[in-house]
Amino acid sequence: MSSLKKIQGQPSWTFRTSEVEAAVTRQGGHLAPVRFRIGKDRWVEPFEVAPWAEEKLAPGTPELMKAMRGDFFCMPFGGGATPYRGEIHPPHGETCNAVWTLESSLPHRLDLSMETQVRKGRVEKTIELIPGHCAVYSRHVISGMKGPMSLGHHPILKLPGANTGRISTSRFTYGQVFPTAFENPAQGGYSILKPGAKFTSLRRVPRADGLFADLSVYPTREGYEDLAMVAADPTLPFAWTALVVAEEGYVWFSLKNPRILRSTIFWMSNGGRHYAPWNGRHRHAIGLEEVTADFDNGLAASAGCNPLNRAGVETCVQLNPKKPLSVPYVMAVAAIPRGFDIVKSICSGRDGQSVTLTSQSGKTITAPLNVAFVTKANP
Image (cartoon, rainbow, N blue to C red; front, top):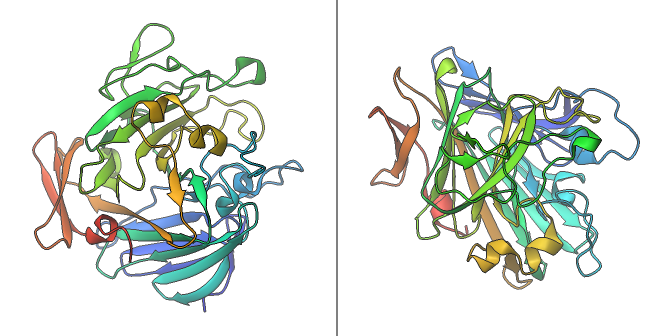
């Protein structure tokens, strides 16, 4: 069994292959730091660890904020300020706040579990590395629960400097900025995108000042905190999100089943929060979050009638205590050649054991990856 080590302020379990070295926190099950090898002696670390990771935070700070790093599984996704049928969940749910139990481990795999208390049930987390693959395979199996639930993965990536990342997604059918003011200047928070604005391209998103933002380039809009969402085409065999960091010679990308994780939230955090513990220092970070939710409005909003589900975008899954729900998700990294600018497409190989990424400039790369992990919903 893997033993706990304190890593950047949090007791964590570690696992590895020749291509990937990773840690998962006991508190909240946050995945980071993660190192990916993209050359013989070259490693990259795409995930962010919060700058306050080793600081003592104010009493009452959610455990999520203390541990915040890398990717974590949220259930329900969003805030918990409004109860849902008597359920009062912590921000983004118990799954990223409470303690996980280690059930078993191998050098390249962790099996964890949690018995949830707010809505009684069980969540099993498996995070696995496959030798020869520069990827992390994550699966959560939810059992014993009934009723609507918002959920999602919350990866947070860091970038080396302004305009260093190029972001793209598979085909989407709906795009919208967070519907109300995302931050309040009176409390030290600032946003720039136009609340509720709809868009059909990441490259032309309305701003509150009448101009347009290009969300395919990041970090930009220094000093602002913004949220936008796109809904993947549910007819695709799999959906993808990609971030090219040409300055560091790699692309990070994720695959999901768009019938389970319906939308992608862009949380652009670039110094727009001046209240604790952010204090204006959370910059050049972006959440590329794969969810089924009404933005981050929480379970009550996601389970009720809202503009997204009225537009045909599902904001909840329906849990059945007799039929466990499996949520698969893959994150991977690959080296890119010079001139590889922004991902235009990701296609599965004929054997389902590789993907080919094509850039807008016409460059291609192929990486080993088990695509069936996400296209086959249940194990």
